[in-house]
Amino acid sequence: MEEINKTAKVQFFFRPFSADPKVQALIFVAFLAMYLTSLGGNALIALIVQINHSLHTPMYFFLANLAALEILYTSCIAPLALANLLSMGRTPISITGCGTQMFFFVFLGGADCVLLAVMAYDRLMAIRYPLGYTLLMSWPLCVELMVGSLILGFLLSLPLTVLIFRLPFCNNSEIYHFFCDMPAVMRLACADTHVHQTALYAISFTVLSIPLSMIFVSYVFIVVTVLRIRSTEGRRRACSTCSAHLSVVLLHYGCTSFIYLSPRSSYSPETGRVVSVVYTFITPILNPLIYSTRNKELKNALRRALRRL
View 1 (cartoon, helix red, strand yellow):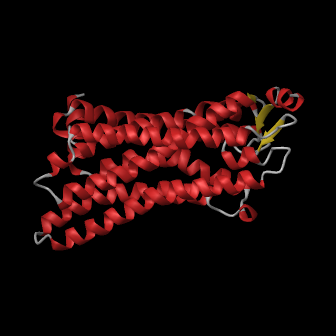
View 2: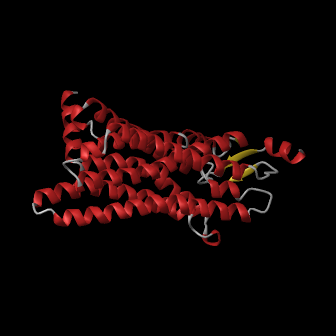
View 3: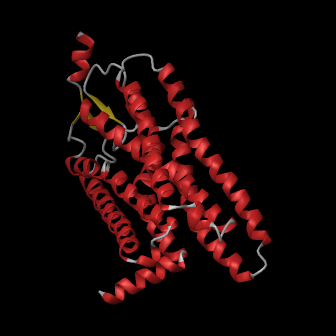
């Protein structure tokens, strides 16, 4: 009981990127610009899909939901990170607040991973069965797949968060990060975390490998189908719809695999923090950029909307 009381009173602080206030101010401006760009870009994609009836298809339904997830995903990290940059790491977060941030971060990130696999399956159905696509990917099925992504993200996040925050944290500690990421928080526990590290690695491997395997299998079938298409225009259209999704998959899975599947002995807090900037701030910016430049229908809808304005 005494250990629980001690842990409940613990507050965490985030280590500044630099001891120089001027450098911190520059990083703050960069993070704020990336956050606002991410919000604007993803909100624009969701809005364009909503107001254009020609984009009311399963592909764009999933794309709009991916954009919404990216907004929420970034927003659960950016405000506190920005506050800490301004205060030089003196803005505290309670253990409850840290657990809440971790829960939503893992929940939304896990849903993101599953949704990318769903989007790969959707592309496979569209390319392999173009005539029966609307029947195979009916609206009830699309909604079920989206809800299923959220449920799987929740079922991943809850046990991981409980697993980590059952550990005792004895004193106010400095997290070598800009948000409550799992490896960084676990390093602060005043207890043996070997079992927790093993469980985190096993769960992370399962969660990342299963959707990635589904994406890989989907693209194998997509490549086989594309090679059978005789017209150059047909191949070009199929490749253009897949290249944007594949680029996002490589960015998302590459960064998360580096953080959560690296051996503990090779984990560097500094490197982990830099890589985390990529998948929490930069990737949400690149998603709308990649889709809007490589997808002709979305690009045309965006141009029409800008002309109206």
